[in-house]
Amino acid sequence: MRLDYLTIFPDYLAPLDLSLPGKAAEGGLIDVRVHDLRTWTHDRHRTVDDTPYGGGAGMVMRPEPFGEAFDALGVGAPDETVVFPTPSGEPLTQRLAAELAGRERLVFVCGRYEGIDQRVVDHARDRTDVREISLGDYVLNGGEVAALAITEAVVRLLPGFLGNAESLAEESHEGGLLEAPAYTKPPVWDGRAVPDVLRSGDHAAIAAWRREEAVRRTVERRPDLLPPSVLDDGTPIVRAVPADAGEIFTLQRACWVQEALVNDPAEVPALHEELPDVQAWLERWDTYVVRRAGRLVGAVRARLEGTAWDIGRIMVAPDLQGAGLGRALLEHVERVAPAEATSYVLFTGAGSVRNQRIYGKAGYRLRRDVEPPPGAVVLTKRRR
Ligand code: SAM
Figure (cartoon, rainbow, N blue to C red):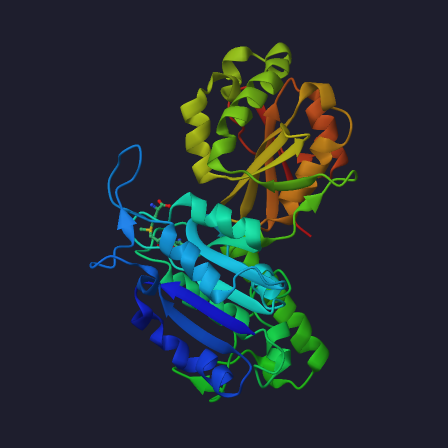
């Protein structure tokens, strides 16, 4: 694989000669070429930036040196991808790294200052395949660190790069889950023993333990990675994002009007909330939503209270009720409960007979021994 880097700080990319990419270059697996963008400037100061059109702070990188560099490097070949690291790009994931590992050549274009004139990206896209990639939701000073990170994630996937290809298959993110914890010798250190199962020699039990730990870690740390539950028609249930607040607020109003008709409206908290209330609880609860044709039509939230997974705000757009969406949301939120949860708990209006019937069918039992909030009833179900 050929790797080209366009940068105004070629020294920044010196680590490419070290570590894994360094070894791969020695072995001829990758051909690394770092280019100083200023090679393609023509003024005394070798200028690469200028003030932004439309005003604003900072400087923007001018397009001409990039255009000349692309010509000189022959950008536009098949099986090539030009990578622009940028905080507004698609996130770098294992899947994306694997995709890039299949290319013959990657050309990294490292921005500095306030970024690169947009026409450079458009121009590259006219010539070849372009990916704008972000390392994460934060802003770095330049694209070099991102280019290094992308390189390392990609190069270690090249066939023949890692001694042990199996270690790739077992890693975090490969199977959509985080990796289980790892242990080595000694068997006891600092009074802490390696889990017995790992020393048992029982390969099936070890595999099962690793899978369980991987799921537990993923649920705890990165529930957003869990495969979305998918409704029968293929619609996924996904984690809510802050930008969903307005639609959830609207859906909540629509759904709880019905509740107000069968309960005392003063005792229907969801109906009294305003948008800032919804925005606030979205930050504190694990919330999932479902969209149909772009429209937010269902939601549910949950959080851990002791060892109970407190489920609430199951809402389905009134025109879609009775089609199984509520059941799918409930099953989904039960499935993503953290490992500590030993039971599920739900509250609904004392007058909401229909809801109580639905929850009863889902295995929930009315708890007369638990004090409910005013006007409500409590239902619980043991986790199996
Ligand atoms: N004004 C730009 C913005 O808000 O999107 C940020 C420019 S940043 C200071 C300068 C350069 O750093 C970018 O052009 C990009 O190459 C690189 N960069 C910064 N943050 C990054 C990130 N999260 N992922 C990838 N590259 C990043």
